[in-house]
Amino acid sequence: MKSNSSKDEIILAIESSCDDTSAAVLRNGLLLSNVIASQSVHEEYGGVVPELASRAHQQNILPVVDAALRRAGVERSELSAIAYTRGPGLLGSLLVGTSFAKGLALGLGIPLVDVNHLHGHVLSHFIREKEDDEVPESPYLALLISGGNSQIVLVRSDSDMEILGRTIDDAAGEAFDKCAKVMGLPYPGGPHIDRLAAEGNDKAFKFAKPHIPGLDYSFSGLKTSFLYTVRDGLKQSPTFIEDNLADLAASIQRAIIETLMAKLELAVKQTGVKAVAIGGGVSANSGVREAVADFCRRRGLRAWIPERRFTTDNAAMVGIAGAFKFRRGEFGNIDAPPFARLTV
Ligand code: KG4
Image (cartoon, rainbow, N blue to C red; front, side, top):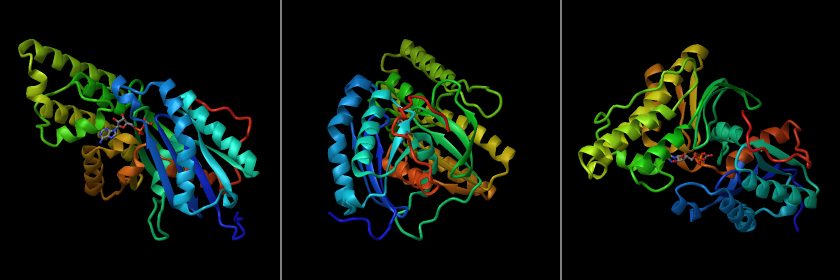
């Protein structure tokens, strides 16, 4: 076995917070591999089934970690540290990655670095594959939008983040997924709405917008308004959904984006930042990406739009967040249990 005699910083990262098992390897902050095993088992249930997710992680974790090391051309003996997602997420899912990371770190006698999954999403713009890949300059605003979270975060540095606003009910991804479900689309519905919206008229339907003070979000009213529109439409015509699928998708996508952008605009005004980054599964949405890019262009701000493969859950983002902590000497405790709920 090779040993890490070159003193390179080589980090193996493990992510298992929801329904993606992922492992990544980074050398001196550069990504060498990022392997993701997604779980299709949940599709027929219309949402993630926690018990099934834990079992699938158990099956996937060893082959995923092996593949990440193999693709990176790195031996276990070369590793400097193991970074892992400690929370937030589904407890059973987190337990699989946490236990695996702890066992491996103990066995190899190397440090363990626990990572907040949300920090990973926020710091995903620091994932570099080449030395000259650019990264954001702090301070900047991160719009973190996923299936479980919707937050506006002021990032002052990789260790200093402040949540300026968050959802008081559903996350943006939940709004996409729940409206998709009403239309009979498969889970997760966000990508289906995105695809259909490209062919629809986004002004065909109007939905009641939330009026929440400050920088917080609310999406549950929008979902209810969508449900009522569909219910009333079905009373007029039993084929209302099929006849209006693309227009419904485009209109709800527009309403979600307008809601997201209104608070983002307020946050930019309040903070005076010069850059905006997006992250989380919903940042894969074509309309969101366009809206943020356009918003920044018009105001002379720098927009950080992640590659789609780094928007949904992945270990590369855990690896880079872990690398920052490793360099600060912030190591995890072997006794630290995973957390289902954590904030930035
Ligand atoms: O970050 P993520 O993979 O998981 C967590 O929530 O942690 O985000 C998943 C969410 C789902 O709600 C999914 O529907 C949404 O991201 N999503 C999208 C798109 N791709 C994924 N929503 C809208 N448009 C998309 N293209």
